[in-house]
Image 1 (cartoon, rainbow, N blue to C red):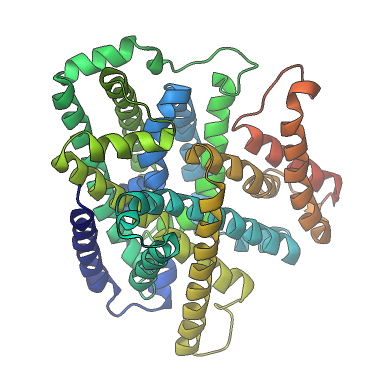
Image 2 (tube, helix red, strand yellow):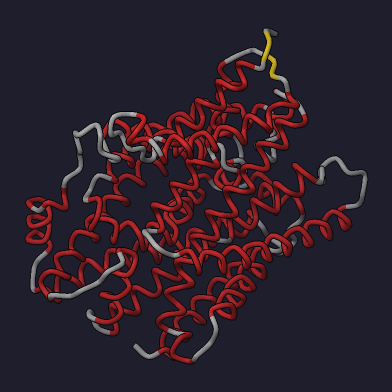
Length: 480
């Protein structure tokens, strides 16, 4: 495909995106930015959250990941489903009852100043790393297929992408993102479905035949019963459940969209609808990954990186129309990787660390401060993406969950302790406990084979991290 064609597709999509932005950001204020004035339709939020949850990581890495992990990821997805139930029935009612804008305000009410700042700080670290990793994945593809052909440096590509994100989120914030996410979800899912169709046509196989081949192949294995294995199905399930609770229920970006709904009932309807749909969407991505492997085998291709399988086949082997479809899906996946993260991080820094809601200053002054925070976080994204361009050495989704295990664990422990005990913590010691827990997990993970008779940690590292934080809080607490 011509780099000019790829660039043209990107520009057309961007124009459509900014048209939606213009319609939604008019007359927006700080409350529009933070919680969408609490008028977001629940079904729009539910549909848009599909694209926000999947983003570039699922679009690129999950299909390629089938090469190494088969369909075992579906066990994690089933765990997600139960995690979303906990969010809908436990966390959302609490957030609405306390009328929170930043969900980390709960930690301040329950524990105190230092626990509050610790929770917000870990979110900022987690979301910055995760969003930067997602952005890198998509930007890197644009670099390979467009900018390298014109000898444009990677950093200019990153700068262009982040500038576009700034422009369409700066004013409208969450009110804009609720609607742009629906656009992105539509094109992303359409790209996956059409990619399946084009691969079938290229292989001269009807869909029924592809389903039969996938079902009979080794790639369709879901349950791994060896308890030593990092993807042992029991720990995969519980890892998925707690990953969802931590990365969605304790994540300002995802909860900010839920808190923009009119009331708790609509927020719960959003969560139930979204979680059920997400199971089938992830299965579709895994099916795409399996038929990509069939394509590789049939054509005798040699593709080393799992993250390169989908883009390489779509752009170089399936013809220009399939390439265009893939790129539209990729671009659709790219923007949710950053827009929600930039908005939620701006919200957290503005409210949790600068106390913008309580400041006795004018709305105009608050808006100026928010703009400065927004631009500062965008600069951090730029530096982080450049850092990941040096560290790119294995499947991105694997990296993402590894990061989550270390950085969301303390949040899981803090919220669990607050919800399920009535004890009073030693607030000043909370930061030390939250730092110690991931360090201990890193040590245990590194030497788990020697310490635990061959056992290897997988995604359940998040659960262990949360338990260590919970235990530390309990040791240094007293009865109410």
